[in-house]
Image (cartoon, rainbow, N blue to C red):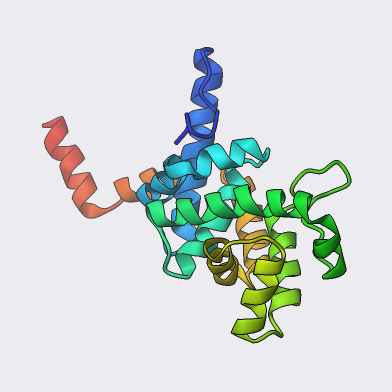
Length: 200
């Protein structure tokens, strides 16, 4: 997952710092949402990590969206695929059909043409598609140049902008989480017994 995110380095100290950051984010996501460290890793190694790199998004924002997917019951490689199609197809459609997006009040790209924060994008799609029937929403997404698979992923995220923000904020202060969780596990009686046996 670290490699997929482009966070490997030939510099040993920098590589360790990056690994620690990724690990802390994964473990924190595990403690916040209905997902595991392995599922977050599987999602990022299944296209999502590379997709985040392409649109200049960091591991914290990506993991926040994956945490919301997990809360909707979509985890692991499936979540990685859904995040990938959103990150790949939404900017592409917005660039090709800028007028159509603008007419609906969808501003997914900033002034420099970069993808805005995912929480803001989810809020905008929620505002636009939320009041529509399923048929209207499907027709609107098709009009915007978005496929059914992208639409399905967006529908799972709709209404979750605030959750993404909360997750992202928590993940940005995830430093030390792995060590904290490991130390807590060592405090259990069975862990202490294992340590005692090891010492003996």
